[in-house]
Length: 84
Image 1 (cartoon, one colour):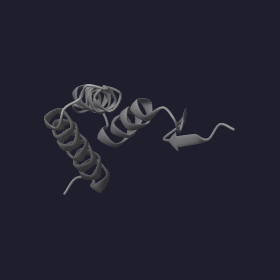
Image 2 (tube, one colour; image 1 turned 90 degrees about the horizontal axis):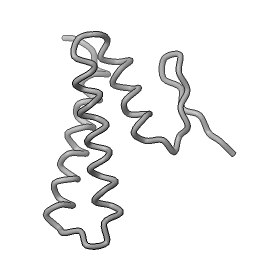
Image 3 (tube, helix red, strand yellow; image 1 turned 60 degrees about the vertical axis):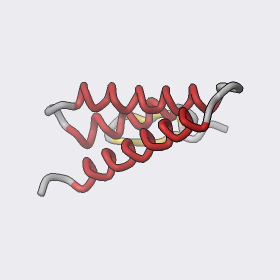
Image 4 (cartoon, helix red, strand yellow; image 1 turned 180 degrees about the vertical axis):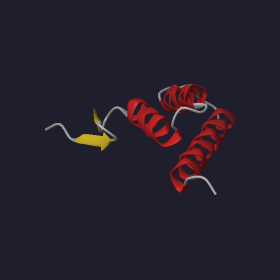
């Protein structure tokens, strides 16, 4: 079974985390700075997945990946809150 996640007019498969997060950033950010923020979101997901799948990972790398994921969550929250 394939579950779709719809943001804007584009649907992505739920298992494609990087694409889902990037799409949220693209839609919520609009034109101003969306390319840079999308790259940041994709890089954060790549980092987290690399740490997760590294059998020789360290606590320091795991902590850095966790901090980056928290930063990404804060970024998405701020974008969805809208301009003040």
